[in-house]
Image (cartoon, one colour):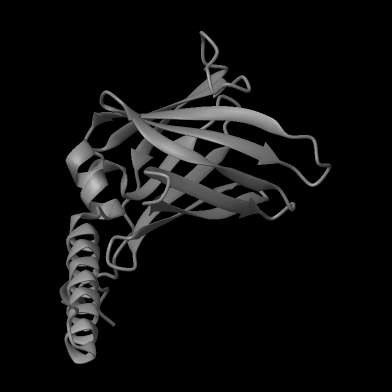
Length: 191
């Protein structure tokens, strides 16, 4: 015995609505389970990286670097300046790739692209840098916390598979830079 036409339509509608509801539930649960960059940084114990940093090269040059939160801790903007050379970039979490991505550009037209990950208590940036001449270079920088006011960054050559050279080609020690605040009213010279 065949069901009436209206019963078949009701069954199709009911199944469509149930399937739609299941999709909404799956998407909602999935979106709620996604991690933000801020959560990943906190879980990894790398919040110490955020701030302004200064280092001095062996030749006496000064390097200023910064890492700042933005967009509700979904992005870190970063920058550096060494003499006339400077660059800006950003780090964000790409949920489709399950990785923290960095992109950046410098004032000479160079572009850096890559990813960050953790190696124990160290934050490792593996980057491909393409200067204006187009000759790509691979490099990695390994960031480690020395103490609350000091960060060590080691620079490594990197092969096409992402493996780092055995020894760093350079190391910098950064000190946390505290911006000077305006003098309080009672500290200002009296006239």
